[in-house]
Length: 392
Ligand code: ADP
Ligand code: MG
Image (cartoon, rainbow, N blue to C red; front, side):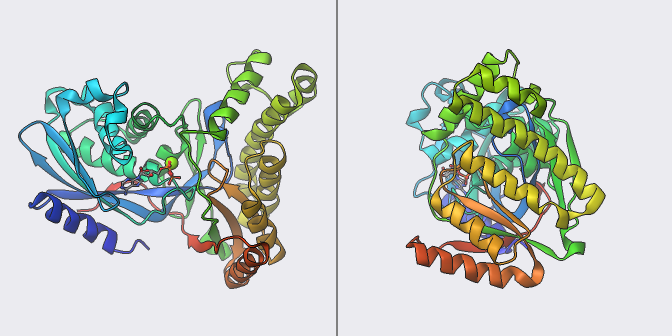
């Protein structure tokens, strides 16, 4: 369950910063991705679920056309006249504190749909989503902002449109070239279910996970190794995927099947080929996971999770020793499957574990980290939960 304190904290923070009472509170969850990594920006398939950790926002309106944002994570509130957002984003985004670009970018993305209904706002955020752990605190703050702003401005936009506004904020206002998976999971999540998302059509299907009935827990092992989406390897992997698609003369790697791989190998250098092979086989693993969940239930998907991890470690090369250790130790201690999740180069791994094995896996991973001289990991379970909502 969400600790009620994050909602209360948002209200309290609002009162403290803005010396007023909010008109309402909204929240949106972070997400974990069960399987389907680096497939989203290749127009492929993903299977994320919303988690119980949420970002809450308390909102008030103001009559001067200014939007002001505050967060318990930040020392200072940031304010911009709504009329200036178009001048700030994307070209002058560096002038805005990075964290504030997420909610202000969402407002910027929603202004065109609002027209004259766009009025001034105060927003105060509080969150219990771990930042930079591969659980998408960014989608949570975007989803909370999008829901609150769209409701307050009376926008007739569905959840997919709000997810798109979040992605636009992240891509153009923040400058992080991410796909739309996180925002879709945060907007569309449902208890004990995942979202089978076609990232090309944005068609989303709610898929029962049945973890509860099967007595399974999803354990997150946050390595504490920090990653950055805005720089480094993530952009390089995206470029390799685009290169592979161009060589194969397809719009995106989504259009390449496992059967095409033998031919692909003859057409490109080894590194590009291995990047391509990860994406193509991962798309197939997502489809296989959905099928096996329906046919055999969640206890049968462990090997697909392990295969996904191996593919990211060996072909996509986005794992780090901490993530490999987490996966191996969890597996040896009785996890049915485990894999790194999120963009890579750090962040978290997930492990699918029978309820009565959680402590054993926790202890084994902790011991393995200690033996390797790694920092102490943060280990907790996540529960597939409902998506963004107005809370009060
Ligand atoms: P993650 O994997 O957690 O999504 P990102 O780097 O994509 O990592 O996004 C994390 C960033 O999002 C933070 O560094 C911060 O700028 C912003 N952010 C997330 N949650 C909050 C919050 N509650 N308040 C302020 N900023 C936040
Ligand atoms: Mg993020």
